[in-house]
Image (cartoon, rainbow, N blue to C red; front, side, top):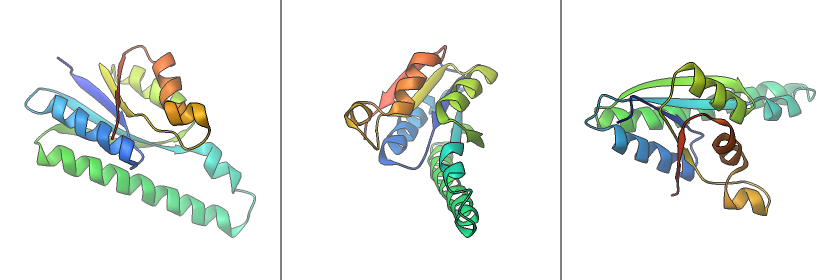
Length: 143
């Protein structure tokens, strides 16, 4: 049913649930699951003027990306699901929207979680923006 599924992942419980659901949908099908980790440039830039902290933050963000993608890839490999993995920098919802269009994604599977504020706790702000901007169906996974 789906040729290409996009899963933005940050290693959180919600994104892990999205990985699991996407892999389950793709299992036994001719589907490629695209695991995408977006390094939020806003977070990276907020520490850029702080001397040594900037390089430490960049290193930490790269390690988080690698860990999140490694976990997603191991789940796909265990289920014999075809996958691609990518890390990009930028505003997460904009990168997800652009990646989805570039790769003709059929379904986006995202976790529903927020880190701040009441609105974001109901539906993560990035998830909310993606739902409103991508040209494809979005499945919201909950842990």
